[in-house]
Length: 243
Image 1: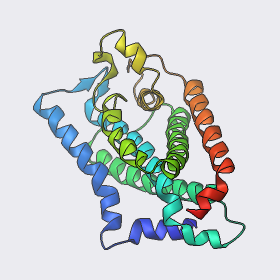
Image 2: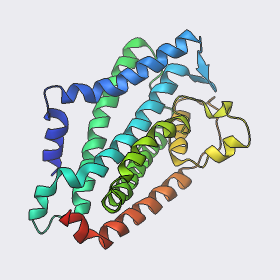
Image 3: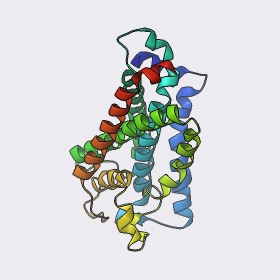
């Protein structure tokens, strides 16, 4: 299943592998260009170009993982002919492929950043890895729950697509959380995506200042979403396979 998903992801059409790199790269390029137009050099003590890159890559990891998990059941129906294959298997396979592909994309962008002379070496590698995995697990949980919602209410897929755009703005991807006035800043700090991104950013600069962050909170939300998603998959397994 992993090989099938990976081949489809990278070679599903003539330029599939190129779009994997171009989509986040173009987003980062546009945001960096906008920052140079308004002459912003730093964000909360961080280099703005790297700050944007971390935010974009982290959010794309969450979003792509969630979307791939969301559509995994529809894309892998043939595997259900094998009795040992369960709905959760195809979801976790698609999510793992996305983690692998985004790792390659991030490696490419980091190499480009290094060539351009930007800060790319983290001060705390372990915390950075923990934050990235936390965002990935969050995407897996979101995808599991969303895929079940789509089986129950088909039109819910449109709602799930709509909320992704505002979710980017309230997750501190392109708007620094420190510019949000109180008490709204405290409300937004409960967003686990924002927590993961800010933890990842704080691993690069000792002078970076942001809201209070907690890996424990991020992984607690991950665990809750994964448990809910797995419970729904277990309870509706027959219905998921039948559809």
